[in-house]
Amino acid sequence: MGRRAKRAALASALLLLGMISGGGYFGRLADASTAQGKLTGKKQPASAKVLYADNCARCHGADGRGQTAMGRAFAAPNLADAGWWKKERPSDKRLTASIRDGRNQNRMPTFGHQLSKSEITALVRLVRTFGGK
Image (cartoon, rainbow, N blue to C red; front, top):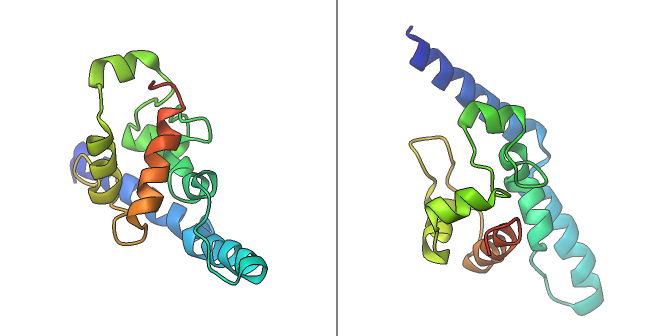
């Protein structure tokens, strides 16, 4: 097995481990919607910060800098770096597509099957607060 294949296998294992051990989006969403549902009679989506913590922070870090073990393994961009935003100039459409469809051949997983359009839009807005304005 070549170096690239070993790195890809390690990255996949880290991603799987992070998904298994992270508690995950679904548990927190159920807790949040159940608690809010008791107050309003409706299920409410989780806040963008909760969505980010459950789905993004294990790679991108709580501050968006990508300084986590998985972030380094997958070469997650530093979302707090103004230089990255200036160079990449990602539109909301591109950020939405990256979250929904994934990016860079298995580095960024797809979230389109587990997050609604409004949740993805909320994440795009939150990610922009890290330094991309």
